[in-house]
Length: 234
Image (cartoon, rainbow, N blue to C red; front, top):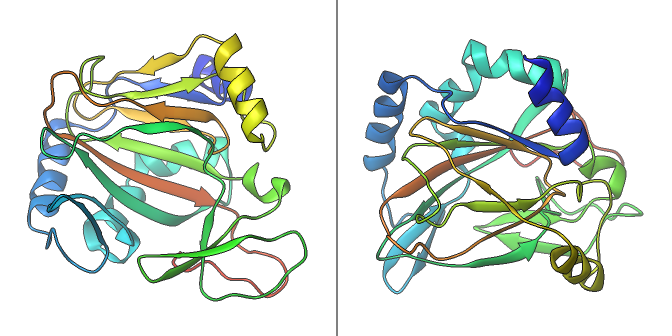
């Protein structure tokens, strides 16, 4: 991997490949996405429109995506030994044009609840148990966001605040960071890739010119968890 993106990940908590997947690969993934049951048990629906689907690691096209040699080479450089532990499909469009406030991704998906010191609070999403782990686990996590559609400044792109990925921030710290910093827009072409640390502050506004903005969001983490906890899917 080029030195500049690695330095950006260490310093800022993210980097962007405007183009990463080849056009035939993107077309194949889109075909697989469009064949899914949009209103299955793992889907999230708003006003009758499915805009997200969880539990994607059980699907063959996602397993094939994360097994591609270019993806594995990136993981081997950035987080050697890390495994895929959660995958979600997002689709922002004119019919599902949502906003996401500034936040950090702090929850992980686990097989079952085991009360381990430092883990909590607990929740359940699409039938899967989630928990907020301690900082040392979150610092090992890595997120790949594969873009299946062009995403520019008008299409509700991810916005991030560099350098906010080192600590778990409370709401006051989040508001202070947002007020004091300039956000970066993570625009990509079709097939682009955004790599980020989950603790990086990020947000997304509604698209001003809505079109499909499909993203396969894959999280990677350490192979094992402490205290008898296990990843829900890996």
